[in-house]
Length: 567
Image (cartoon, rainbow, N blue to C red):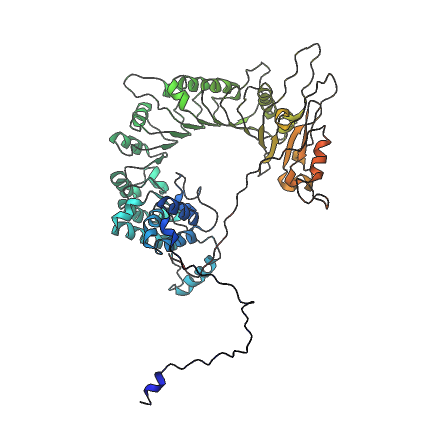
């Protein structure tokens, strides 16, 4: 019996009753003993919560791994979402649906855990060879979707790093064979130009994945374009054509097999001209698009696009037009395109010019629907005393002064002095009774020079919206604003150069620093203090100065943990 006494539990000594309690300094803990309220949450609310836990799981864009992603560490977010799926049976269906909806495999952790895992892998590796983590994750994902068809059916988007998709073509082929509902996946470059090493992957994608939404065809992939005539990928939304050589009739027939095509990107296609858009007997019409991008397509002219947009179906559907380095569409012909595009919302125009605009008067660029304009004119020689690009920006300023673009709210230009052109008071014409034209619409101007990396933001506010008066002015010289592109000191936002342009009460405009960028004093602890109102009142009774709206991107906090689901 003495042997078993050793296994008896020893009684803990009684606490001294006279010893004072230290509960005041101990951290307070609260325990909830009521019913589980999370059971009352519907699946839609749970999905929204899990999307905040792992934001990239809700990424349903058709952009590649390099062009997509969220702030923070995507691998840690995916690990946290996997833990949520294992927490409760009620959460598993919603969390697992998000976990396999949009899958992203990254080469590294974007947090402090990367150093820890790198050191661990270095210690465990044999012969000094490090483990290729993205490849291992891809193989594990392939085993999961091929072993469980329900998980494979939930996969719709897969984002892979460049080196992984170039070196694991066989693994990608096995992966897509188990994901019948996939809509987008990062593919190797050889897949787009007809490389024989991607033949197995191409066959699997055509046979198993009919819901592909985006595809690219590079030079050498002409046979892949012709394969669309066999009925593959009829749900394509975005098609990119890069320097391909194909008969226009075959291309029109291929487009006729894509009833849902909405975005077309054409780059470096030398044979394409205005006849590509013409109506031809026995061939389907050129499709009506939501977005059209032409880059280095010199055979297409403004008249050809206007003829294409003469169809009400094409004109009413086109929302975005991107024209880049197309010699057949000069600035002098943009008014023809804007007149034909009835519902155009965004226009991106980029050109390199060597000569100024002719002195002949040009019709202004006019559109009642254009909301965003990216107008980038680059002079071929930047060392000239009078660069030719200045005349093109003067033409844009005249179009704005004539109120021909009333719906325009965002403007991007490659001229740092362009905001000053709009803020100058218009000159008075002698012997003219008509009032001079004045810019009178709210506009956000983003400008930068050729040697600058960031855009300079200037918000122009008309007198009607700023609460100021517009007195009549019979004479006097124009009133100009300060040069925002030359640096204005810390009270103007420092390096950001944030400014707001308001009427000065004398027919012109004046640039003032934004409220959140003005210097603060003891008597003005907040940007909305009395100092700001006094400054605004000194401009002619304008009242409180308007504040520019700034778009801020709040970064997500980085989370570190010793546990990793995928390693």
